[in-house]
Length: 161
Image 1: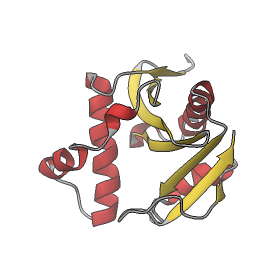
Image 2: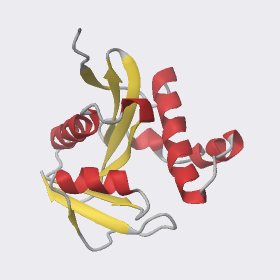
Image 3: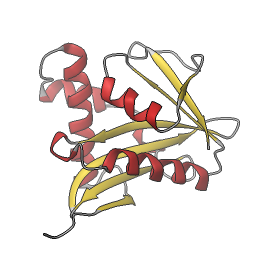
Image 4: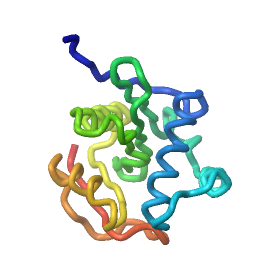
C-alpha cells in the first residue's frame, strides 16, 4: 500500500483550491455556530471583506495543505504588532481529519510565522470548537487574556515560537 503524504505550500487566497477551502472553512464554523448548515449566500457574506488579502508577505501567509495531492486544508498567519502573529482559518476537511495533517499544518504555520519575524503566536476561537481547542492545547498553546474582541471569540491562546 502506498503511503499518503502531506504537503503544505504557500498559496494565494484566490486560487481555486484556496477559495474552495476558505468557503468550506467558513461553512464549517458557521454551521457549527448556527447549529444548521450555512447557506451559500451566508458563506458569501461571511467571506466579503474578511481581511484575507493580508495573508500574504510581508503581512502574513496562507498555506494550503494537500494530502496525496488533494486539497485537504488550509491556515493562515497574520502579523500583529510586537513580533506577534495571529493564527487564523486553520481547517481540515472532514475526510482528511485523523490522518496527522492538523498537527503538521500547525507546525508549518508556526514556521511561516517565524519566517515573517514573529516570536509569539496568538489566536482566538470559540468554546464549541472542541477539536480546534484540543489541537492547540496538545501543541503547547495555553490560555491567555483576550488580546482582541468580537462576537465569535470565547477563548484566546498563545505560544512562544
